[in-house]
Amino acid sequence: MATKTIYSVEYRRLVQQLRARREELGLTQAALSAALGWPQQRLSAIEAGARRLDVLEFLHLTARLGLTPEVAIRVAVEAAKPR
Image 1 (cartoon, rainbow, N blue to C red):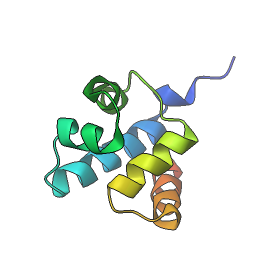
Image 2: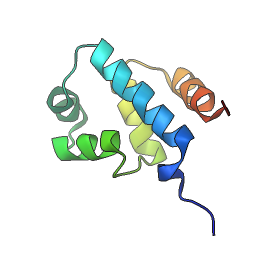
Image 3: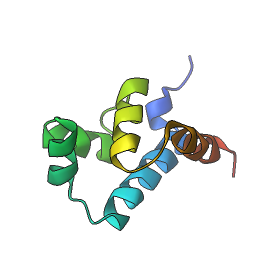
């Protein structure tokens, strides 16, 4: 049986990069969640690896982090590369 992607090294790397971007922008989880219209607990669970982003959430989140869809996909592709 295949391992769920939420537990993969690549997914964790992607989430870590998104969290780092949030922190670089000086945004708290509460501020970013409010801007997205999400409960803060949702963002916390995503960053903790307890909840997986779906594709639309990913695009909304990355847009609020100032990334175009093209750049966001490049970030995801880079995170998915084997190391």
